[in-house]
Amino acid sequence: MSMTTAAVLGTGAWGTTFAQVLADAGVTVTMWGRTADTISFINGGENPTYLPGIALSERISATTDIAEAVSSCELVVVAVPVKAVRATLSAARGYFSPDVALLSLAKGLELGSLKRVDDIIAEASGVPSSRIAVLSGPNLSREIADRQPTATVVAAHDVELAKEIAKACHNSYFRPYVSTDVVGTEMAGATKNVIAVAIGAAEGMGLGINTRSTLITRGLAEMTRLGTALGADPATFAGLSGIGDLVATCSSRLSRNFSLGHRLGSGMGLAEALALSPGVVEGVASASPILQVAASVGVDMPITGAVVEVVEGRASIEDMGRMLLARPQKMDGWKIELV
Image 1: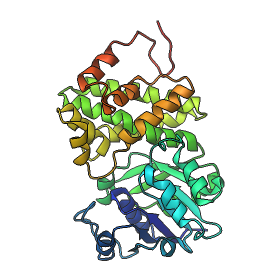
Image 2 (image 1 turned 180 degrees about the vertical axis):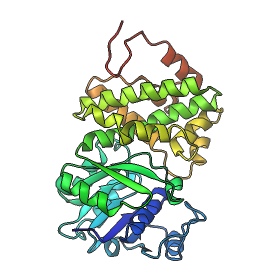
Image 3 (image 1 turned 90 degrees about the vertical axis):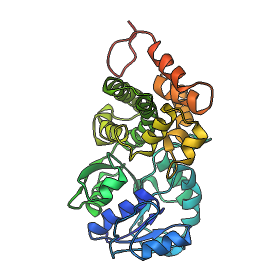
Image 4 (image 1 turned 45 degrees about the vertical axis):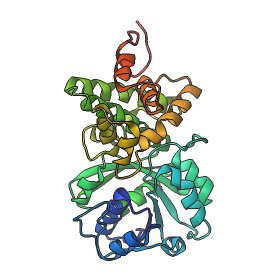
């Protein structure tokens, strides 16, 4: 059975783009947001704050009433920053259809609880984990809004749910693959944002492709070590939600995380760099929680640790480079094997 109605919670660039993806796949979409002006613009066919120049489908409407947005929808897409997920789903709780499916676009861990987004959604919404999925991949929103081809991963514990959601968002330029590795897909999406901050900083300092390639490869090793320690399939990190998303996020100024790192590497202070970002930079918000989770399972994450030192003011960008280059020798690969 095909999904024909969806709600998208969040009116930022990715939420608006994904609403367009669904609409282009034939789904009728209701968006929800808090800002009346943004809602009015979307109902007029554009979101000029986040996607200027992109004409939105007539299948998309918007409202500030969360009950109106989610009631009777078969699919509810969570496209708010990680820090807003719990409050947003708590506000929507009680208005969902009995068989609703929830799909998370958010990437990161919750401050304090250190929980993944799928766990936050289950707690806050009351929807069983069997009806919750996550999406991650090389999905820079502006390129997708321009209908440039890309692929992604929809992961759910129930493969039939993953297939159903993938079908709902499959169109001529957006190709979803499916997975049952929710943990791996979530952790890949969270950790790659932190690595992107480091790589952006390296480029901002004027360093070249060798440095970027090194950081991407060693960043992938960090992601894989942490994911597998938490029960993920290592093969997930060699796929679209792992290396695919990492390469995209670490290679484009369209990435808020890469751009934030680039500003830092160019000499800008953190507060100023964050103020210039058009939205939440999840790599900064999630770096410390990710490092705490890694410590709890005995996983070494030197790049992530260096980013935490910088964003928490204990080290400079130059110090970060020195910390990484001074590490002991080890065998190549994602496992820790000292030589």
